[in-house]
Length: 129
Image 1 (cartoon, helix red, strand yellow):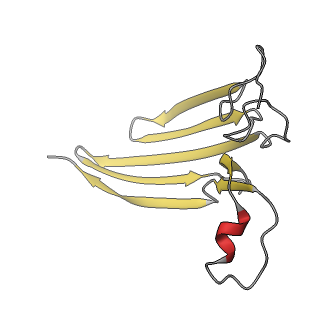
Image 2 (cartoon, rainbow, N blue to C red):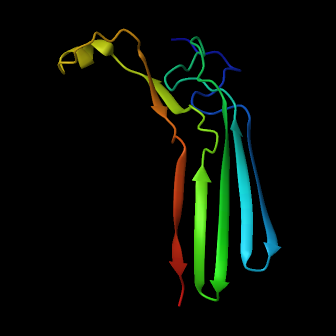
Image 3 (cartoon, rainbow, N blue to C red):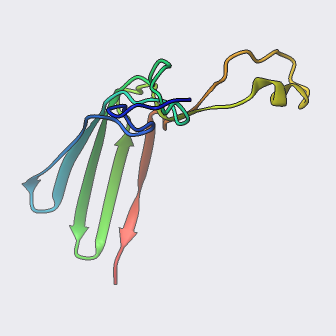
């Protein structure tokens, strides 16, 4: 495959932005959010940029914490608050090699994607001594 100068490096988005903010309405409360936006990128292995790209995506993460006394903190975190469906990484593979595994379907697409984390909620108690 002939690659000419000026082609994009596969797997690396042309644009990416991250933004975060924290707010303390009271000394014991902290509320925060961060947003991530990632542009489209080529699948790994597509050095000549001849195939469709992985689409870009954006995410919103939220967080809150409450410290009732010194050394004790209750926290809550929501990742991917709008439950966006997105792919972190993409590459190519040989579908014929998967035919020997005994799958009940025939694979015809050479693309493979690693999907990102769906909506998730974490909470807990943090104690420091």
